[in-house]
Length: 382
Ligand SMILES: Nc1nc2c(ncn2[C@@H]2O[C@H](COP(=O)(O)OP(=O)(O)OP(=O)(O)O)[C@@H](O)[C@H]2O)c(=O)[nH]1
Image (cartoon, rainbow, N blue to C red; front, side, top):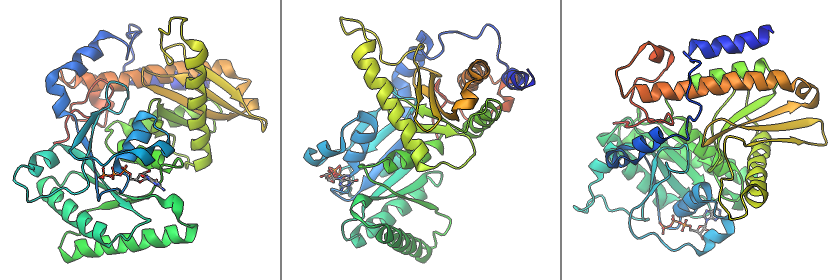
């Protein structure tokens, strides 16, 4: 009982009221907020930049549009800035701007100041299978310009297409790119400009992991979410839990135990299985209905006494847990704790909405002082 009480207290400390709206995430309020024309341009942007054929469009299509990696072989070159607003289908309430390979900063029609001012993260993609000297020059030019306009941008470098490299070669390439890029910044007295590096490929889960980290940095409520997950798993006998954006399979948060790639991949695969089965057998005969809704939940028992447990949290988010079979015997307790966890998550994002109205005492627990949208992501990073 004490276990349940702790989680309940946690929910209460976020001001969860009994009258909490049951349709959170599915109601009309969201449509009102999200559909306002003003909101679309003020959403923080994630920019995808890099040389031609480095893999920018492929990354976007694979992560957010479920394109299979092989299909990207037939993608045509991007000739103009392609703005992708994914907020209607995903928790990730950002615009992704995919740039054509060569952006000319000296072209007067290219208003880079306006673009960088509203940018939350700039992802620069480098093709690791190609000679990257030119890409490094371009990276330096791009980040130094962007930093001068908006030093708040998170600069992320994807060392991409590493599926073609051996493990040793991968490490060596990362070390070399890291060294050269930082030397260039030091030469330009830009030591304060921090670059984060990721080894990525669309042919495995590394691109989803990297994108997860990029997106997490833009979520002001991240520490609160991690805290909630920590309390939930420790009181429920769960080994690992991920809060997933169902559409993109990006994880928005996880508990503070280290992430091992295999667990993450297992949870991603579970989401695919659940959505695929639901699409085939879960819709009505006329094809109406949704493959993912409030009723969505799944239990998969593996042959090594591990259980995977998925439950709906909001319209876009699912909790996926990994636990031992013996812990799953206390399913009632887990479900009760989940119920409290879910209420707390809703309340965290409800606070986000209320910051658009005068901020009340409920917002005290939130690490966020900026206005955020209903799904909890920042409304404007500028
Ligand atoms: N091996 C491998 N190939 C990749 C990967 N990602 C993308 N590619 C391939 O790289 C090629 C170029 O990909 P695009 O996504 O069109 O590149 P882009 O950067 O958008 O190109 P532009 O639109 O010309 O700027 C395609 O043939 C992709 O299949 C990867 O992770 N590994």
